Length: 223
Image (cartoon, rainbow, N blue to C red; front, side, top):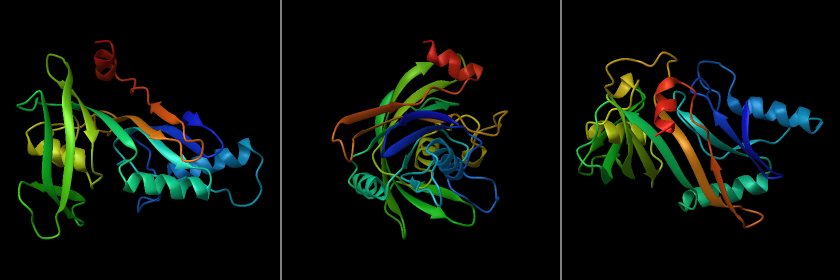
């Protein structure tokens, strides 16, 4: 477990693409339990240890995840999240570049629970939710393109679905049209950073997650 930031109120972890943030039907151990065990041991706490999930990442996605160490911090961070006061940036390696080097995407997403998949539409549909993101091209290789994504809303599979809708499928993302999977079973989407005003200390906090160590990410990191 790679700790990116920790104080009395918050702990941030660099999640790997194999981790789940919270428990699901697989029964695999979630990251929140690992963090809770760390806090219990590190601070010699007895009984139940508080660890609140501030936001989630899809299992195949890597990068920074925030957890709250106190109920006070969790409540304030949740409020900030609802008010779009926590800025999140993602890096995505896509199989084909989008038509525009930079653009703001607006779609209406409809979630299919049975398929665990979202569908993007240009007009409002029944049970749809507005999804907005901004991307900019920041790197290119012979076969792939690297995009930086600024997420304005937090919808189910939003980045994966919206990029696929404009022909920029994320590498390894079979669910949204990638031709083949990644060797580790993850997808090439990384929660690169979060930025927010600390809910207690009122200081600006910027947390950046190092990139995964595979050759493609390393090549882009050197550009």
